[in-house]
Amino acid sequence: MSEQRVTKFAIPEIIFGQSSIRYLAQCSRRLGAKRALVVTDQGLIDSGWADFVMDILRDDGLDFLLFDKVNSNPRDYQVHEGADLYVREKADVIIALGGGSPMDSAKGIGTIVGNGGRIADYEGANRIMRPLPPMIFIPTNAGSGSDISQFCIITDVERQVKMSIISRSLVPNVSIIDPDLLMTKDDQLVVSSAIDALAHAIESFVSPLASPFTENQALKAIELIAQNLQPAILNRTPQVMEQLSIASTAAGMSFSNAGLGIGHALAHSLGGIFDTLHGLVHPIVLPVVMRYNLPVCREKMCTIGRIIQGSSGECSLDHGEEGIIRLEELFAKLEVPNRMRDIVPDSGKLEQICRMAVHDACMLTNPRKADWEDLLHICQEAW
Ligand SMILES: [Fe+2]
Image (tube, rainbow, N blue to C red; front, side, top):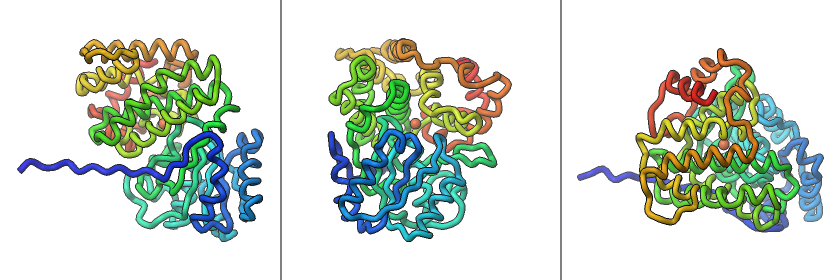
């Protein structure tokens, strides 16, 4: 008898749409909140969105605490500080407001609250054994997918490593996705977030763990980003931002369940060593990694290429390479850094980056195996 492949698909409850943020208090109460810990960052405080969220809780008579000591590439000690606050002040629900950094910090805080120990104890896949407190996430960019995913990325400051922590327990109870929150973001953040979501979709589509449940989501995400990213920069409308939100959510559903690949392993390594902004890495490495993977997944690359080109006809093998070229043209038009030398100070650092990246959990789901020297060739090609 041939072995049947078993697949799984986990996502949070999703409340989606313009003004959906008004359901926050109701969702909090449903999860038993009496005193919520609101995790966010300085940018969300400056923009007024943190006050907006706290007013919703206040108006509903809910008590809350604010934790805003979160950086981009969130640090291990920040997670422990937040967990200490949660325990000391007897909070009962975690609300994260922000991009990937506040949401990943909230996951780290929940992990420590529910499981104890140090956050580095949970690096890798399936090492969280006990449940986390209830969590509600409100994403403010259309890219990280952290509000959907089983992934949490935290920097171990001493080792200069961005740790990938992967567990079903990290999926929040509720994700409230309100595209209105994207209207005030600057162009660079919209672009880097959308390219991150595109990388999530492409890497997870070719993952050996991809299933029909993830593949359809990945392809929808690629199509929506290809159609809406440039319009979002030229003329930002609520409708266009809603399409990018759908894309980011769909890509999150895909990568959370199918995993990522070499591009994200390198992005985590670069973030750990140089504090590089995550979304800026993908325009540099994604096309080169796609070419590396092409020989082992030609049909899937053709499908991706056909969608990027907006072609409705039959898939031809040429679509794979043409799709990569079209992607490079899109990145050039968006004026994002597209060479490794734009973000790495000298090529002598590449070996360190690759020796670290090869141990990242995302390497396990890349369709073509690679050792650190293969990663070095990829980085040199992207130099
Ligand atoms: Fe990412």
